[in-house]
Length: 224
Image 1 (tube, helix red, strand yellow):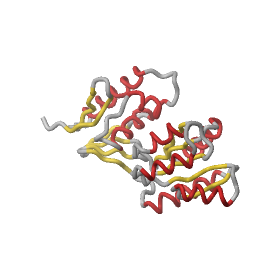
Image 2 (cartoon, one colour):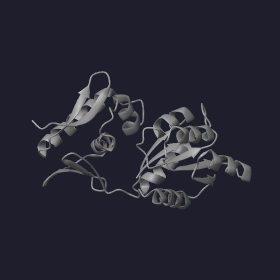
Image 3 (cartoon, helix red, strand yellow):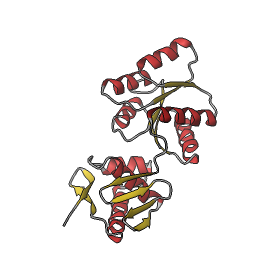
Image 4 (spheres, helix red, strand yellow):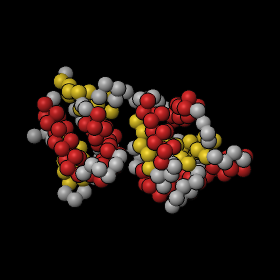
């Protein structure tokens, strides 16, 4: 399961990410509404935890625009507002569920499980592209009978590439979603892509990570 957290209170956003990761759920946080909308529209997430009061765009505006553009990703709206009118506004904007702050971690996890069950996307065990399969539990990358274990960051880079294989993923996107801070450089991305290319070759896969100059990376199958 891959969850997007859109919350401008960074301490709370990071706490939610930790709660999810402790439950073996991949999570990524952004801190304003416009960034949240961009991330939600990629289609890379199984659900969105969305605060109401956000810079740039409110949570209501984000979920309304998601639905207008055809994004059906389940949205759990999170807010300190407790009035019925606020809940109705959130649900009418297109949210699937509504939870007030403060909240308990078990309730958050239960609501997300319910949302993803409703959508039929609970806890995929693996993702595949062409002749390779990535096990989301063991972090093993396999081709036929050959497999190799990926490190944490290798796994995250490969998961992102395999989740949307037709889409070009930029270095900046990988930096934000895998490293999550500004201390890492594009050299880090290049190094881990190089590691993954060697591991794909090691297991005999015909899948290659192609570099598109000035754009980023994409998976391609080479039959040669």
